Amino acid sequence: MFKKLILALVAGAFLLVACKGSVQKKEETKKVFEPNWESIKKNYKDPAWFNKQKFGIFIHWGAYSVPAFASEWYPRNMYMDTATFTAQLKHQKDGPHSAYTHHVKTYGDPKEFGYKDFIPMFKAEKFDPKEWITLFKQAGAKYVVPVADHHDGFAMYKSNTTRWNSVDMGPKRDVLGELMKEGRAQGLIMGASSHFAFNWSFYNKKDHFDTTDPAYADLYSSKGKDLREPVSEAFKARWWERTKDLIDNYQPDILWFDFMLDTPEFREYRPKLAAYYYNKGIEWNKEVVLQDKNFYEEAFPEGTVVYDLERGKLADIRKLPWQTDTSIGKNSWSHVSNWKSKTTNDLLDNLIDIVSKNGNLLLNVGPKADGTIPDDQAKILLQMGDWLAANGDAIYNTTYWRTFGEGPTEVKKGHHSEGKNKDFTGQDIRFTQSEDGTKLYAILMEWPTTGSVNIHSLGLDNEYSKDITVSSIKMLSTGNTLQWKQNNDGLSVELPKEKPGDYAYVLELSL
Image (tube, rainbow, N blue to C red; front, top):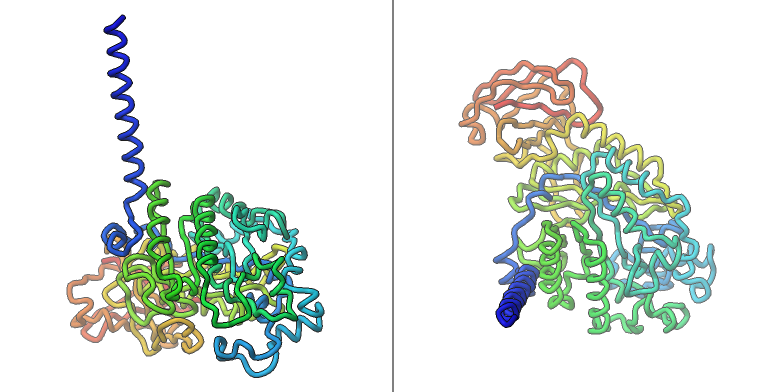
């Protein structure tokens, strides 16, 4: 009996040590990343999977879709009765913003009918996540990033930190959660974006607006009427809890942040965020992607996040992964009554140019308040999907080549530079290559008028192609073999008499 007791105690001790070791090991696993840049730089590497996907869908949808006027900044601009924010918005002219004038005319005094009053009108009665995700898949998208919460402060998910959320108000549905579930069921990678940091100073605070009513400070923020009032510690703590809630409950594969996080006021939270999210990824047994714009300062040191450019591109190859986020809409991210769409040709050309420089494209759609995606946007997505179905080998799972391309059209670089770019010509070519290096793709941005194309970068004495031997060339979308000859001046390819499609044309070179 005594011997059995001793054995039981020894076994218990071993079990306790084993459990303690297991718990300790689990804790160590969770804390690979410490909240400082030294630790993050040491342990972080860009997830290889992200760079393979190339094309994703962004979604701006919220209570601001109800007025559908001007842009998703309607909640801010409807309170601009004078040029109060001229210093912050340089494009703002003297006098009231057009959104303010429209609001007073359409809805009345902003004191009596404020932004909060749009939320009950945001019913999303036709929202069908399966329909959306199916469309995005048909468009050729590999990942989806819905806006979880915009500057307006209304969460599009079941929030544990604010009553202003889509489950308790408005649609009475977990919009983000439903999209996450459906997207993953259909094999897409699902992310979320947070724009909440700017909520602190998003709304104009004046006594003749409802924005100063303390009953709504949890929507309009607790900032006072002083435009220069710095972000309070209480608000930053609130932002942090809200961000953790989003991470913990939805486990996004991609977490995207807007510009305010880049400001000096949030400096101490950036390494804290990166460490927390990356450790969560380890806990979930998956590599996650954190994205930021580095808009105001080098907010995140290079190589610690995936760099994102808003409505802009890079002029050359970046060996680290990066992304452009832009909208189908020229004039807005959210649905507005005067929405102006870009052309399918322009969007595909931008996707190709970005991929040739080692980037991804995150393309935004703006659904209507009822939850339907406008026909013109859906048509563009389907046209892009048709092109990718025929030419996707030159986009997905590719890497950049020795040069991104050739041709006369220069690309402007940086945030908000897309409006400065000119259309590509029949002389503009972009390159990608298969991961194993056996295929080189020369993508003609427009159909040449000469019946043939001469690719100068593949001339016999060109620095880019000296050790390359081309064995055959075909038109990727049709599979038809093409005739070609190579000399010092370039690789000359005879093209079909009729162009195979309406958009960019891919030559697949077997090496």
